[in-house]
Length: 329
Image 1 (cartoon, one colour):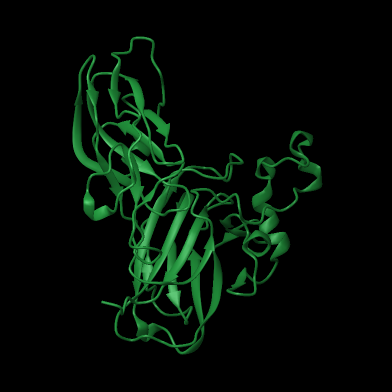
Image 2: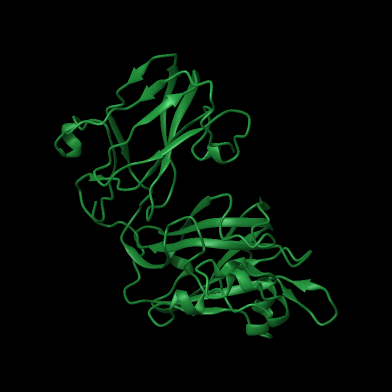
């Protein structure tokens, strides 16, 4: 991906800053702002503060992450949702975006045709994040990174002094090996309502190195309670991934030996783990959970990363959320 401001600009402009009153979504007269709506927080439309808005070649939502042949032009909205993109090369573009603390990707279906000197007022841009029901529990922050999770101290012989007491603690070499040090026999277990994801959720779901030098896939557990099991609809599990490298994620409910209730294809070529990164290619998986897979009381979701060809097969989770069925409509 190239985010660039080339010297031979055509000076096209998308959007303009205007002082315009915030209106209800139904009014559909909201100008020059990026907005989003979450029906289980409020029925109103909120301005998308600090949203990332960009122009890139036409494609699917999120396709800008893989686009490397053309120029892209990005900016951030202000606290009121206003944004402006200037000095854009002529050509065809889709509008893409994403909002910190909100899952999913925004894409406007209109293909913009930009020519030298053009100026476009986009009008309403309203993003409705994926949402099927009230939140039962959540892990992490939907910021497209694994930065909020537990990053261990480095192996002493590999310490890079530049990153001692540094906010980017993940820059240290060999952190993937610390998972086996901290979990030599049993894998990670996270208890909703008890565990703290900043201390108890390892930043990378990696393989475990055996004593013979081979690697094994690992299975993490999320334990939670359901006080009242709703059987008139599906529960929904959101797994937002900040990065993945040659991984296959399997999801099982309450029985680690059954066939996976959900399985991804092989995902990711980011190498963020090996390159001491904390995010890469963003992906969002949304899966329906049959209430018959769950029980009243104690439940466990098993997350298995089964590819075990080396130390860098792994997943950096961004955010995980389980929603109850929507029984209000």
